Figure: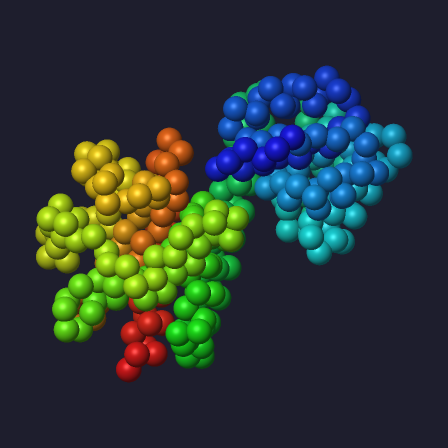
Length: 296
């Protein structure tokens, strides 16, 4: 199965086709679902598809679930994937054993569909928080050791792509003499074959300028402009080209507009969620700190 754009993914490892079908029916609307009935191939399937969560049965021919999770946790490419045991073994001994092997959760059969959805969603959210913190910690480390120059702007701008579904991250800086916002650094998704935005001007038409200015006056509770605002999105359509979904965040220096970070992707009918927006705002704050610290 091909991974669906913007969807998290789940791998089901169970020799019972009825269980696989039931779990797939529950999850496939919100997740890309992979499945294997062969426990011996579970690690290879996980390595190839990198699911966000694995649902693992215990009683299977060949390798049982305990042996599978032992291999998953011992492999560098799969050790961080949360594993939820879904099994008929409901005694305390097996629950304790499963958790001791590194399982993140343990669900007994028969199960209620809502329980599966809820428990998978919890693991996804926890994983997102871990990934977000890892990225932000790396950026903060660079800020502390002063690891910043024009040559590695791109590596810093790439970092949000590990947490957000973005096609481009652009850094615009205010030109000292003209006051224009000029793109001075960018990261573009390598598979998108997008034209460069370097040295292009941020289109500060009246609407965009007014929106950014409202953020800077302190009268607005918002910290960014996003395409989630449909009326603003429609008005900005002629100026955005192919990248119609965006989060745009200005940053300041000594009370004056210094630059803008722009996170964007193609229109796909999906709004930015609050986790992505919060991450973009926090990332921008840290990035601005790195940038200012090393411009002094």
